[in-house]
Every structure is written in C-alpha cells, then in structure tokens.
Amino acid sequence: MSSNLNLPNHEVDSQKWLRRGYWVLGVLLLWRLFYVASGLIELSPDEALYWLQSKHLALSYYSKPPLTALTMWLGTHLFGDNDFGVRCFSPVISAVLGVVCLRFCARELNARLGFALVLITNATPLLMVGSTLLTIDPLSVMFWTLAMLSGWRAMQANGRTQDWLWVGVWMGLGFLTKYTALFQWLCWAVFFWLWKPSRIHLRRSGPYLALLVNGLLALPVLIWNAGHDWVTVTHVGGRADFADTLHFTTRYFFEFIGVEAGLLNPVFFLGMVWAGIAFWWRKPRDLRMVYFFAMGAPLVFAYTLQSFHARVLPNWIVPAVLPFMFVMLIYWEPFWEKAWFRRTFQVGLGIGLVAMIFLSDTGIVKMVSGHPLPVRMDPLHRIRGWRETARLVGQARAELLKEGKPVFIISPEYGAASEVSFYLPAAQSSLGQHPVACCWDSSQPITEFHYWPEYNFWERTGDNAIYWEVLPLVKHSNVPSPESPEPPPELAAKFQSVKSLGRFPANFRGEPMRWIEIFACRDQL
Image (cartoon, rainbow, N blue to C red; front, side, top):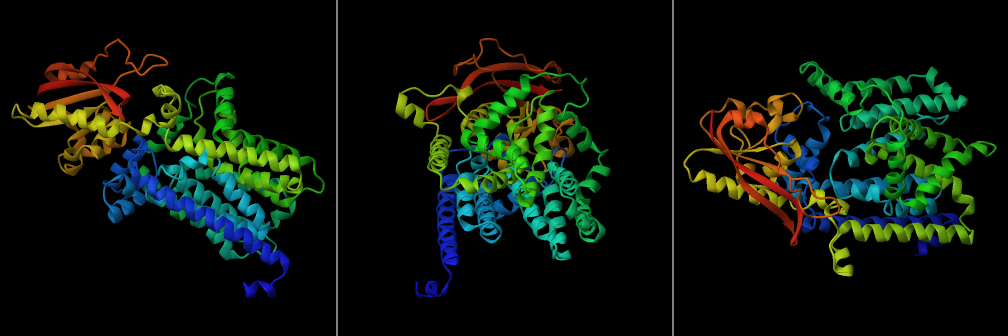
C-alpha cells in the first residue's frame, strides 16, 4: 500500500480498476472451468465434429480450416477424450481476451472503461456462449481482436514494422480458424478510406508485410484445397446462397435483427447501434471511434445485406461485436457520471446476469414454474441428451451383434455421427482403420467423412448395421411427429432387410431432448 503513496492519483485509480478487472476475470475463469467439467452440458454437434477432425489431423478440412481441430488435439492430449479435454481452452481464451482488452483500455483509453468492457462482454449472451463452447468462434474472435489491437499500435505515427508483422500473424491465425477473417482486410481498406492521414502507411512496407505474413500462414488451407478440387470454395459459396437467384425479402432481415438484439443484450445492442451512427455527427471526429467502427462495420454490413436474401446465423457477425463495443464505450464515456446512464448500465448488467443463470442451466425454469421448457424453446437442447442418444444406439447395436456379424452405425448427419463417435465407448475406441460410427452421405463430397476412406461403408459386404435418425417434434411440444420417416431408398437397396426397432426418447434429467427412430439393417449386399 505504501508504494501507492508515491503514484499520481490517476495511476492509483487505474490500478484499482485493473485489479477489479483481474478479479472478475479470474473468478469467471475458475467458474467456467468447473462448469465445463460438471456435465451440465454435452458437446454440440459442431464441437463433436471438430473433435473427430482432431483425430484426423490435416492441413485443412472440407468445411473449416484446421486450427480449432488442432486446439482440441492439444486439449485432449492434456486432459483426455472427454468433455473437459475438448473444451478446456474456451474459458482460457475468454480470460486471455479479457485481460488483453482490459490492459489495452487502461493504456489507450482508461482503466475504468476497461473494467466496464469486462462486465459488458460477460453480460452479453452471444459472447457467453464462446466462453464455454469451443467452436470456431472463440478463436476467431480472439485473433480478430488481437489483430485489431496490434493494428491500432501499427497505424500510429511512430508505428513499428514489428507491429504490422503481428497484425499479419494474428490475421493469418484467424484465417486458419475461420474464413471470415478475410473480411478484416476489407475493414482495413474502409479505415484507410475513412481516415485520410492513415494513408501514409500505404507508402510504407508495414501493411504489405502483414499481407505477406497472412498469405504465408494461409498456405496450409490453399495447399489442401488445391489437392481437393477447391471444394471449400464451393461449400462456402453454397452457404452464402449466392448460387440461388437473388430475391429481396425482409423476413430474414427482421429475424436477424431481432435475434441479434437478444443475443447482444438489448441494452448494449441499442448502445452499440446508437454509438455506431451518432458518433459521425461529433466534431471533430474521434480517430479511435473511426478505427474501431471500421474494424467491425464491413462484416456487419455484408451480413445485414445478405439477410435481405437468405437466413444469416447470429454468430456470423461475432468478430465485429468487440469493435463496436469499443465504439460504444468511447462514445458514451462523457455520460458516465449521469444518473440515468448509470441506471441504464446497471439494467444491462442485470439482464446479463439473468441470461448467464438461464444459459448455464435452463432447468431452472422447471424449478421455478414446475414445467420444463419445450425442446424448441430450450437453447441448451442441442448440447444435451447426446450421451443418452449414443447409449440407445449402442444398445441396439449390441443386440444386433448377438447375431454374430459385424455391426456398424449409420447416422444421417455429420454432427450426429460425430456425437455417437464421441459418446459411445465402442465407437470412440474404434477410431482408426474400422470406425463403428459412419455418416450416411460419406459417399459424396459434402462432408469431411468423404475424405476419410475408412468411413466409406458402401464398399462393405455381408455386415449388419444400425441406422438411426432424429424425429421432428410436434410444434410447441416434446412429442415426436406421428408421421414415421422413411429411411433412404438407397438403404433398402443396400441391405436385404431394413426394420424399425421403434422410437426412443433421449432424455436429460428425465426430460426428452430429442426422439430418435432406430432401424436394424441386415446383410449388406
């Protein structure tokens, strides 16, 4: 304490806010690590697929770059092939990003704004999800933000070439995580266009060295695609629906805006939108707000424009969230001492706290009301019930094995096949030459399974199989549709007999998360 007596008041105040930020981030890190290990949630289909990719390390994959799979490879080698091993780095990434942003604010803005940013990011549902689930988004957001913060240093008048090299490194690692990282070059172009003094850097080597480093780090993806008919380009273009005839509709636009308003916390969503528009009328224009606006606006604009044509998933804009939060913090800083502003900020934190409790365990609804949420309304249903699903499918396989022939499992979707591969012990132990769980469409180049020859069950003969699929539910209920789905006609042509074994609920805490129908397929032709 005595050392603080020699510091100016503003430095003592800065250290106070920094300590508070570190405490919040430290407590949240420990809580999230415990939560990930608790079993309250299971792997999402995408996480299960990335885990399966980590068992087939490659320069790239059909739909995604390799870095998420490589991260899971490291996590599972440290902690094993379990939920914690798969997800252990997600809370760490969130904590690291929080520390970096907190320190950046303390250095370039002020530490109180950094502490506010820590609270805001942890009261925003869309960012909360990335603190526990290890999809491509946590790494993507981290590298986008690191590139943005390194870029802020690089474009100063005394910016160093070293800072531009770091921009290239972070953007290159971002590209190895998610192809959305390419948008950040458009963000740089917009910034140079909006802020004329910054164009002096275009006459220096820094930006071009960053582009070169980015290109070198992108080589693994380019090499893999060059050897696989550039299949990722076709896939990504198809996801954007650019191949379809363009048509205008507001249906997806209002859906997109409504979902984002909820997932970004209504209070902070409005604060970001207002700041992103209103700061243009402030004179003189603030370089900081122009920079951070440019680092997010092109991505948001592109996907907003796409929403007038096709559905846009809410996580597609997530790298742009932190840039707009910086704009919001800087714009609203002069209002901080206003009573109405502080009350509004507290309301936003209160909404975030409620969202954190709800998203941590939606079972609280049943505890309070006595009635569970319908599956369609439960945001956690996609990450629950997979262990039970795998058990049901494995039980059916065990019964068919009694007939004395090898039995493999066919799932109609890549995510479902990956979940069974992870949660069914027999399937997890079989990874290698003769995997138990296969994906139905692995005979076509529309999933990663096509590029793993050991999953090509079409060439097998004489074996038996279990085919299963998830049933659609009656609207606003947990009851499956009475219409029984027909298995693919190719399945009946491939086996001498295909017989339904019945419908089964995959429960979590006694409540069905999904219903599945299982078929026994005998004597593969």
